[in-house]
Image 1 (tube, rainbow, N blue to C red):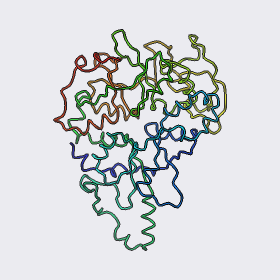
Image 2: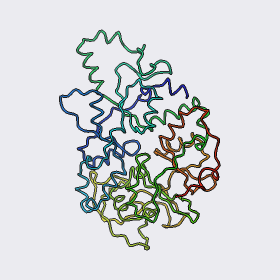
Image 3: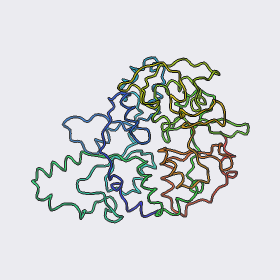
Image 4: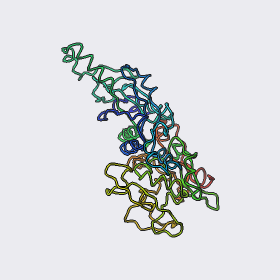
Length: 424
């Protein structure tokens, strides 16, 4: 285990993080869409409202956490028949009727919690860490300046002498106000910290994901010919993604796209909901052009602004105009792209899944995820880039970086362990 994970603490990652602004379960779906667009991982934590006049402790605040709402959850909700018939009513629905309650996805931790302990929590399924802001600690630890085993050492740079000169009531009020302030750390924040410490983690970063055992073969998938709506019944908690595949005559899975929270992160939610409810999975991820005559598509009225296709629906100053569904309205293609549905060589733009090979290094996969702000990377066979092997998510990476070097397994060739022997 690298010492950098032992001697650094969670507080080191909170420097510059903005104060948490709670999104309450009484807010509308329309408000949630705007909040999701500005949040990491295409999702937001949902909270119950705090009772007025109640001084809550850590346990009470933890109990107010409801769950995490993703863009996939919103699109799946808007794809319901009654939502498609009455979009205004659907957009005004409180998120309490959409979010899946799961109090274990967020954990309130002390700033002095060791980073290795925080990683263990995230490996067990925690997606967010709620960290109190400290009035004394400045978040400038250099391995040994912060405490060990979760207990704070006195910060020599803290203005202790000046604080002692303050009136007692002023000091107490300042401490109370700071204790009420929190920041939220995502797994993306942790991964950004880890990628800045690759040298201290050697030789793990340059080891292949296959040798590290970081490939998860138990992914969710859906055949391209099945209705896209069926993906809502198969989406796992982590990663929130379903692979869209085609099965070859040899029984191999060829990945052609994905339906996931990260792909739907900043899409046109109304168009995506209609497409999810009416198209096959293959059509949903590959896109259907306005001039496609192979399938008759009805005109679908969506709210769109003049600013672009990816603007959020029902925003201020929007205008209603009839528009036929296309991949561009969902945001899957660039407007300048030329392609034809069904062609294997077509340009798929944003609908193309993020992939790597079984021989890719852990550092390369982490760089892919951070550069694309993705929650996962699909893993393909070393010899055939279309044959799906598995998926690598945050939990898989965090498990890999905490492995002792002696636990590495020898690299496995695709014909021996991955790809060609895995059946759909």
